Image 1 (cartoon, helix red, strand yellow):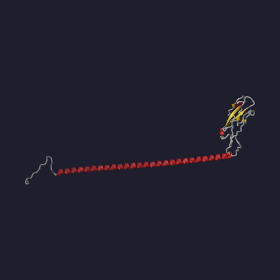
Image 2 (cartoon, helix red, strand yellow):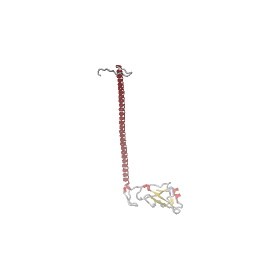
Image 3 (tube, helix red, strand yellow):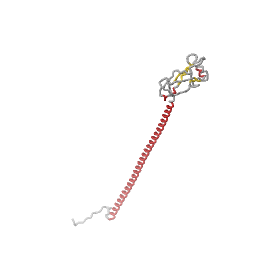
Image 4 (cartoon, helix red, strand yellow):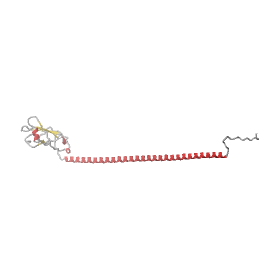
Length: 223
Protein backbone atom coordinates (compact mmCIF):
# COMPACT_ATOMS: atom_id res chain seq x y z
CA UNK A 1 0.00 0.00 0.00
CA UNK A 2 0.97 3.64 -0.26
CA UNK A 3 1.75 3.74 3.38
CA UNK A 4 4.64 1.20 3.19
CA UNK A 5 8.24 2.37 2.37
CA UNK A 6 10.76 -0.28 1.29
CA UNK A 7 14.47 0.04 0.38
CA UNK A 8 16.18 -2.55 -1.80
CA UNK A 9 19.55 -3.70 -0.51
CA UNK A 10 22.69 -3.29 -2.80
CA UNK A 11 24.84 -6.21 -3.87
CA UNK A 12 27.78 -6.97 -1.65
CA UNK A 13 30.93 -5.04 -2.62
CA UNK A 14 29.07 -2.27 -4.55
CA UNK A 15 28.74 1.14 -3.03
CA UNK A 16 26.39 3.54 -4.60
CA UNK A 17 28.08 6.89 -4.38
CA UNK A 18 29.31 9.75 -6.56
CA UNK A 19 32.94 8.49 -6.65
CA UNK A 20 31.99 5.38 -8.64
CA UNK A 21 30.11 7.42 -11.19
CA UNK A 22 33.06 9.75 -11.56
CA UNK A 23 35.45 6.83 -12.17
CA UNK A 24 33.16 5.41 -14.81
CA UNK A 25 32.91 8.77 -16.52
CA UNK A 26 36.70 9.16 -16.51
CA UNK A 27 37.10 5.69 -17.95
CA UNK A 28 34.71 6.47 -20.76
CA UNK A 29 36.51 9.73 -21.46
CA UNK A 30 39.83 7.88 -21.60
CA UNK A 31 38.40 5.32 -24.05
CA UNK A 32 36.99 8.05 -26.24
CA UNK A 33 40.35 9.82 -26.21
CA UNK A 34 42.15 6.62 -27.20
CA UNK A 35 39.71 6.10 -30.04
CA UNK A 36 40.24 9.67 -31.21
CA UNK A 37 44.01 9.20 -31.12
CA UNK A 38 43.73 5.93 -33.01
CA UNK A 39 41.49 7.50 -35.65
CA UNK A 40 43.83 10.47 -35.95
CA UNK A 41 46.88 8.23 -36.39
CA UNK A 42 45.00 6.15 -38.97
CA UNK A 43 44.01 9.28 -40.88
CA UNK A 44 47.59 10.55 -40.79
CA UNK A 45 48.87 7.18 -42.08
CA UNK A 46 46.25 7.26 -44.83
CA UNK A 47 47.27 10.77 -45.80
CA UNK A 48 50.94 9.76 -45.81
CA UNK A 49 50.21 6.72 -48.01
CA UNK A 50 48.15 8.87 -50.35
CA UNK A 51 51.06 11.29 -50.69
CA UNK A 52 53.42 8.38 -51.46
CA UNK A 53 51.01 7.03 -54.08
CA UNK A 54 50.73 10.49 -55.64
CA UNK A 55 54.51 10.84 -55.72
CA UNK A 56 54.95 7.39 -57.29
CA UNK A 57 52.25 8.14 -59.83
CA UNK A 58 53.98 11.41 -60.72
CA UNK A 59 57.30 9.61 -61.10
CA UNK A 60 55.73 6.98 -63.35
CA UNK A 61 54.11 9.75 -65.39
CA UNK A 62 57.46 11.53 -65.70
CA UNK A 63 59.12 8.30 -66.81
CA UNK A 64 56.42 7.75 -69.45
CA UNK A 65 56.93 11.28 -70.73
CA UNK A 66 60.70 10.72 -70.85
CA UNK A 67 60.22 7.48 -72.79
CA UNK A 68 57.88 9.22 -75.21
CA UNK A 69 60.41 12.00 -75.71
CA UNK A 70 63.14 9.40 -76.26
CA UNK A 71 61.00 7.63 -78.87
CA UNK A 72 60.44 10.94 -80.63
CA UNK A 73 64.19 11.63 -80.60
CA UNK A 74 64.91 8.17 -82.02
CA UNK A 75 62.34 8.65 -84.77
CA UNK A 76 63.88 12.01 -85.54
CA UNK A 77 67.33 10.45 -85.78
CA UNK A 78 66.02 7.72 -88.07
CA UNK A 79 64.48 10.35 -90.32
CA UNK A 80 67.76 12.30 -90.39
CA UNK A 81 69.75 9.15 -91.16
CA UNK A 82 67.32 8.21 -93.93
CA UNK A 83 67.52 11.71 -95.34
CA UNK A 84 71.33 11.64 -95.24
CA UNK A 85 71.39 8.25 -96.96
CA UNK A 86 69.04 9.54 -99.63
CA UNK A 87 71.28 12.57 -100.15
CA UNK A 88 74.34 10.29 -100.38
CA UNK A 89 72.52 8.10 -102.92
CA UNK A 90 71.59 11.16 -104.94
CA UNK A 91 75.17 12.40 -104.86
CA UNK A 92 76.50 8.98 -105.92
CA UNK A 93 73.92 8.79 -108.70
CA UNK A 94 74.82 12.30 -109.88
CA UNK A 95 78.51 11.33 -109.96
CA UNK A 96 77.72 8.16 -111.92
CA UNK A 97 75.61 10.12 -114.41
CA UNK A 98 78.44 12.61 -114.82
CA UNK A 99 80.92 9.77 -115.45
CA UNK A 100 78.60 8.20 -118.02
CA UNK A 101 78.22 11.54 -119.79
CA UNK A 102 82.00 11.86 -119.94
CA UNK A 103 82.27 8.34 -121.37
CA UNK A 104 79.61 9.07 -123.99
CA UNK A 105 81.39 12.29 -124.88
CA UNK A 106 84.68 10.42 -125.24
CA UNK A 107 83.02 7.77 -127.40
CA UNK A 108 81.56 10.48 -129.62
CA UNK A 109 85.03 11.95 -129.94
CA UNK A 110 86.44 8.55 -130.88
CA UNK A 111 83.73 8.10 -133.49
CA UNK A 112 84.40 11.52 -134.95
CA UNK A 113 88.11 10.76 -135.04
CA UNK A 114 87.37 7.41 -136.59
CA UNK A 115 85.72 9.17 -139.50
CA UNK A 116 89.22 9.89 -140.83
CA UNK A 117 89.60 6.16 -141.60
CA UNK A 118 88.19 5.50 -145.05
CA UNK A 119 87.15 1.96 -145.96
CA UNK A 120 86.75 1.53 -149.71
CA UNK A 121 85.67 -2.10 -149.57
CA UNK A 122 86.10 -5.16 -147.41
CA UNK A 123 85.44 -8.86 -147.13
CA UNK A 124 81.85 -8.04 -146.11
CA UNK A 125 79.48 -5.14 -146.72
CA UNK A 126 80.86 -1.98 -145.21
CA UNK A 127 79.30 -0.69 -142.01
CA UNK A 128 79.07 2.84 -140.67
CA UNK A 129 82.30 4.67 -141.67
CA UNK A 130 82.35 6.30 -138.22
CA UNK A 131 82.78 2.85 -136.71
CA UNK A 132 85.85 1.97 -138.77
CA UNK A 133 88.90 1.13 -136.67
CA UNK A 134 92.55 0.20 -137.06
CA UNK A 135 94.14 -2.48 -134.86
CA UNK A 136 97.81 -3.45 -134.79
CA UNK A 137 99.99 -5.84 -132.82
CA UNK A 138 102.52 -8.66 -132.82
CA UNK A 139 102.63 -12.26 -131.66
CA UNK A 140 105.93 -11.44 -129.89
CA UNK A 141 109.52 -12.45 -130.53
CA UNK A 142 109.70 -14.84 -127.56
CA UNK A 143 106.02 -15.73 -127.26
CA UNK A 144 105.16 -16.93 -130.79
CA UNK A 145 104.34 -20.65 -130.67
CA UNK A 146 104.99 -21.90 -134.18
CA UNK A 147 103.78 -25.29 -135.38
CA UNK A 148 105.22 -27.63 -138.03
CA UNK A 149 103.09 -28.63 -140.96
CA UNK A 150 103.42 -31.69 -143.18
CA UNK A 151 106.62 -32.08 -145.12
CA UNK A 152 110.23 -31.57 -144.20
CA UNK A 153 110.21 -27.82 -144.07
CA UNK A 154 107.73 -25.06 -143.18
CA UNK A 155 105.78 -23.73 -140.20
CA UNK A 156 102.41 -22.06 -139.58
CA UNK A 157 100.77 -19.91 -136.94
CA UNK A 158 97.14 -19.12 -136.13
CA UNK A 159 97.06 -15.49 -134.97
CA UNK A 160 94.50 -14.37 -132.38
CA UNK A 161 93.06 -10.90 -133.10
CA UNK A 162 89.94 -11.20 -130.94
CA UNK A 163 91.23 -8.35 -128.77
CA UNK A 164 90.65 -5.92 -131.62
CA UNK A 165 86.90 -6.28 -131.21
CA UNK A 166 86.05 -6.43 -134.89
CA UNK A 167 82.40 -7.08 -135.75
CA UNK A 168 83.12 -7.89 -139.38
CA UNK A 169 86.02 -9.67 -141.09
CA UNK A 170 88.79 -7.07 -141.32
CA UNK A 171 91.24 -6.37 -144.12
CA UNK A 172 94.50 -7.86 -142.82
CA UNK A 173 98.03 -6.83 -143.74
CA UNK A 174 100.83 -8.87 -142.15
CA UNK A 175 104.57 -9.55 -142.31
CA UNK A 176 107.24 -11.57 -140.52
CA UNK A 177 109.82 -10.00 -138.19
CA UNK A 178 112.80 -11.81 -136.67
CA UNK A 179 116.56 -11.95 -136.08
CA UNK A 180 117.53 -13.77 -139.27
CA UNK A 181 116.83 -15.97 -142.27
CA UNK A 182 113.22 -14.84 -142.62
CA UNK A 183 114.21 -13.03 -145.82
CA UNK A 184 114.63 -16.47 -147.41
CA UNK A 185 111.10 -17.72 -146.66
CA UNK A 186 107.94 -17.32 -148.70
CA UNK A 187 104.43 -16.59 -147.48
CA UNK A 188 105.42 -13.78 -145.12
CA UNK A 189 102.41 -11.66 -146.17
CA UNK A 190 100.01 -14.46 -147.01
CA UNK A 191 96.78 -14.49 -144.98
CA UNK A 192 94.65 -17.62 -144.63
CA UNK A 193 91.29 -18.30 -143.00
CA UNK A 194 90.56 -14.66 -142.10
CA UNK A 195 87.85 -14.38 -139.46
CA UNK A 196 86.55 -11.76 -137.08
CA UNK A 197 88.87 -12.96 -134.33
CA UNK A 198 91.75 -14.77 -136.05
CA UNK A 199 93.73 -15.58 -139.20
CA UNK A 200 96.49 -18.02 -140.15
CA UNK A 201 99.82 -17.64 -141.92
CA UNK A 202 102.00 -20.37 -143.49
CA UNK A 203 105.75 -20.04 -144.15
CA UNK A 204 107.87 -22.16 -146.47
CA UNK A 205 111.62 -22.07 -147.14
CA UNK A 206 114.04 -23.40 -149.76
CA UNK A 207 116.52 -24.27 -147.03
CA UNK A 208 115.92 -27.63 -145.29
CA UNK A 209 114.82 -28.13 -141.67
CA UNK A 210 112.96 -24.84 -141.38
CA UNK A 211 110.79 -26.09 -138.54
CA UNK A 212 109.28 -24.93 -135.22
CA UNK A 213 112.57 -24.93 -133.28
CA UNK A 214 114.43 -22.99 -135.96
CA UNK A 215 111.68 -20.36 -136.32
CA UNK A 216 111.51 -19.78 -132.59
CA UNK A 217 115.30 -19.67 -132.27
CA UNK A 218 115.34 -16.91 -134.89
CA UNK A 219 112.58 -15.04 -133.03
CA UNK A 220 110.19 -15.10 -135.98
CA UNK A 221 106.91 -13.40 -135.15
CA UNK A 222 103.85 -12.18 -137.01
CA UNK A 223 103.21 -8.45 -137.18
